[in-house]
Length: 52
Image (tube, rainbow, N blue to C red; front, side, top):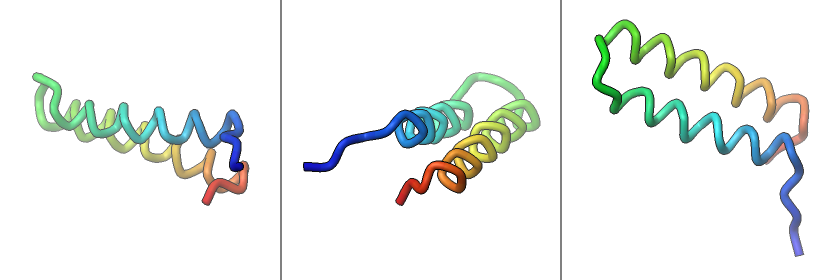
């Protein structure tokens, strides 16, 4: 059985927050900035934690 490590859980959470940022009722520039910020964090977590 596979277990989820902390970095994988955080990466998934940041991907979900990134998608939520796109649907928020904010200006396009704010939504895009929040999306990019969360995706950058998710990518870095995947890189360091060995997330597949």
